[in-house]
Length: 541
Image 1: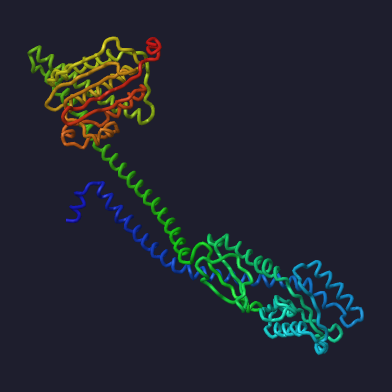
Image 2: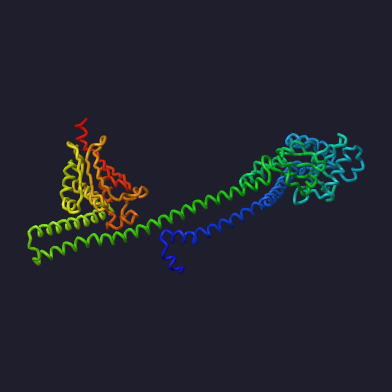
């Protein structure tokens, strides 16, 4: 039963079912799976974004360590090679300190503490404070380099007296060059503006440049660094909806806390935008894919319909050729056997043979012309001609068919029509094809009219009948090759489906146009518009 039902379906319905089951259904399943994947990705985007920012903070920390190591190597490392116990060491240090502060504006203060036994001579709170910070940095293992040469500590104490300088310190433990043991330390106090604008801002900007290449939200990232007393050391903007990530740096910046937010959006909106962008790209690809499938189905349907039309064409042409051949064979055999004695009857049979021969010849000419058109070898010899003479010639060749079929034909050809550039045989073929169609599809009302007149600047030729008409939806298709109107009344009349396509090609080759007006009540009217010959136009001007 299923096979019988499938066989009864039209070819277009079969193509639609195949496309739906074989293409659209898997495509819908893949689309749904992609949507689910994007929805899950939206939820994971928040965590991934936070993980990326944590990695970015690690890079910021490495950048700051490298910057501090460079400063310590340039300012503190040379002190290790000096003989601090010599009498002239004091002047040498003073000169070196002055050079350092001149060449390194990021240095607020530079100092040296001698042998550990000298620590007993410390008698000022500021000196005690520095010694405390050095001990604290050693205890915290606050190294900024892999070799453990330089120490860093940041001190913030809002209630401490002014002589206890707050800020970021770098220390360099010194060794006695003769004994090899520790003999003190050197250190610098970094400028607060340098720590904020260079150490922090410079390192963060380098990381944000990396993020700018990988994410569209880099310009919206807000980063704030504060100390253990919640004093803000650096901030590049204000977060619109607060901070969604807060974390402490590792040593030696463990008393600094980083808080990250977004300037003009929030994390949920960021994830949603990412989802919408991905979904938009998916929809765009889906639209192009569906468009390609639709075009492929349309092309397949067109090719199948064309193949079906060609098959119908072969069948119809076989009938068109066989019918006149059978009549010619029949009447010529009757005449040959001498079965007709009346002269009038013989002349009628001769007329039938002549008419069928012309009909057969016309069918063959149509097929040959169509073949030349398809191969691009059809040419026309355009010369000045009189369309009134062409029309009269066509009517004379169809006179027997018109009279024998009982048609009443009315002609209204305007006098003194201008000449036109035409190929007489081709135009005669076009008028003949239109006249044949009018006769074949006229139905019960056997009335035809042919009019030739000037319509504006063009020569208009109208051929009208009172036949079965052409549906409005199919009027634009009747000039296509092999096309026949899908009407049972039409298919009762045999035809090749080439006549009107040849007419259109001939008229357009003459720089003219052809149109049709038709309905089921008044029949069909074909109108040909041809431009007058150039010399005729000049003469009229």
